[in-house]
Amino acid sequence: MPCILRLPEDVASRIAAGEVIERPSSVLKELIENSLDAGASRIDVEAEEAGKKLLRVRDDGCGMDEDDCRAAFERHATSKIASIEDLDTLATFGFRGEALYSIAAVARVSLISCRPKAKNGSRVEAEGGKILSLKPAPPSQGTTVEVRDLFFNVPARRKFLRSEATEKAQIARTVEDAALANPRTAFSLRTGPRTVLEYSAERGGDDAQCLRSRLGEVLGTDFVKLLLHAEAKESGVRIQAFLSPVSELVASRQLQFFFINRRPVSCRALQQALYRAYEPFRAKDRHPAAAIFVEIPAEEVDVNVHPQKREVRFRSERALYEALTRTFSAALLKSKGLPSLMRPWAAGQPSVILPAEAGTQEESSGRHIQSDRHPGESRDPAGASSVHEPLHAQEFSLRQGARSHSHLRWLGQIERTYLVFEAEGGLLVMDQHAAQERVFFERHLARLKEGGSQPQRLMLPIPVSLPASSVERLLERQERLRAAGFEVERFGRGVQVTAAPEFFEKAADVEELIHRAMDHFLSPGTAKADARYDAAATMACKAAVKAHDPLGEKEALRLARDLFDCEDLSCCPHGRPTMMGLDREELARRFKRSGAPPL
Image (cartoon, rainbow, N blue to C red; front, side, top):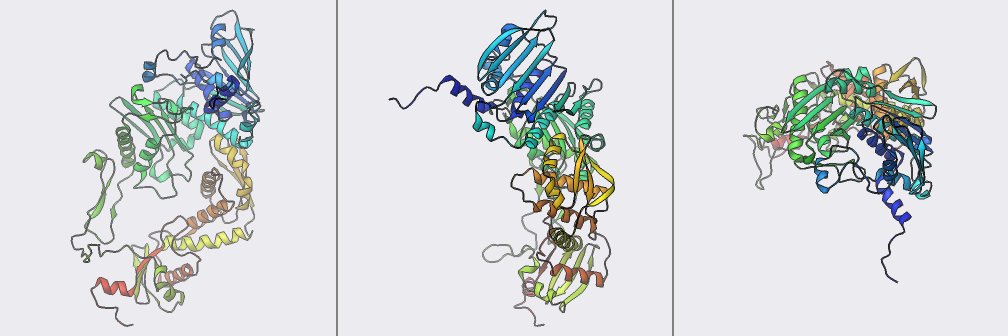
């Protein structure tokens, strides 16, 4: 017997379908792309049981005649390309001719289509990769595709589908992506008896106005009003972007959308350029909301590197990255002045972030330019710098001196932000906001873990605008929010918070917590404690003393003692250090003494 056997046709077709059809949203993506390629001005989607039982897509595009309806279910049958050279100039979404073939291999499919002004339409029934019937249908322009019982003949694949809420969220995100990329096309999504999404076609205005209007439908009008518009065109590449101002960053990465030639993609170059532009302004736990649209010549991008066409490859990725960074940075710097970043030991040698218009190519991308060594810096015989990084206080004896409360002496406040103490003959510098944030955080977290923060009903529920794709995931994990003292329910296209812990006093704080929770919940390995952690961290940050608040000696000493009683005194809950210091031996070494003077 030979070792290599030719697979039966039905087995081969199901394996091939697995490359294209991963879940119901994969089916929907392929069908929406076909509708857009057919010139549809409206696309209506219906789903039952998150698309596993039924997924119906109806459009008013150009339709097909009887022969095309039959040929559409054959493998690699397409109207988009005729030769290998056509792949270099693709202007359509679907082109491989695998969509309907792959869907029909793992589902029961019905297709009804009709050309404009034709006397009759055509109806095709297919199942398990075979056409069962082809017969006339009533004349109604456009195409309707019904996909039933997805993976009915591949039970192993069906078993690996996620929960209904997760699959619904994926379907909603697929419609959102298509709607954002095609603002002049109307979309609707109905799941069961409810219409989840309804986007009207944008008729008037230029491209930027249409995109902003559609963004308002997806993300919320009030939120989109805050977004900056960035636009550039160079070397045949056109960039349109809508970005968060640096003062309006959010706690979630889920409000980022990337498109190449109107195709939603997962693109590392685009995301890296986005975060590079925000680097001087962004805290670790804050993220920009962004919708980025790039139009690039077809011959400069390869969309055929992934079976589902979610990933793309560029001929000149570095040039695109730099163009994106320049565009984003210019918009941000125009709305926000440059920060001054200086090394603490080199007052005359600041780090400089050059604006996009100035300097060399490296400088214009926002690189930090620093001198390697301060002019007065000495070096040890091995050549290592004698300027050491600041030490955390718990790494030396200052902690013990402060814990005893007898050797901690208040020296003063720098810029009404940093508290300076002497402890055990050393120097301790404390960030007053980060320190108090850590103190409040541990107190709040302990209360939440002990169940001491039961949800308090709100007199007026707090609405939170979220994309429909995030609403389903959030509602599925309500138990995690309830553990943190929150109760959430569906409200319109978003959610509303009906109960919150008693120490949440501002609606903005509650809304921020929901965004942070959304980011955590999208990770399958997230522990239930995450919602409690974020709730405590948010409360602590809002309640803690701020930079530039004046503190007296008694307040400063009390804060220092409270911090040293914490379980972890090294940093605030967001990762910023609470303090740094120099012990007496290090001070002596810096002044080239043979040893620390005796106390």
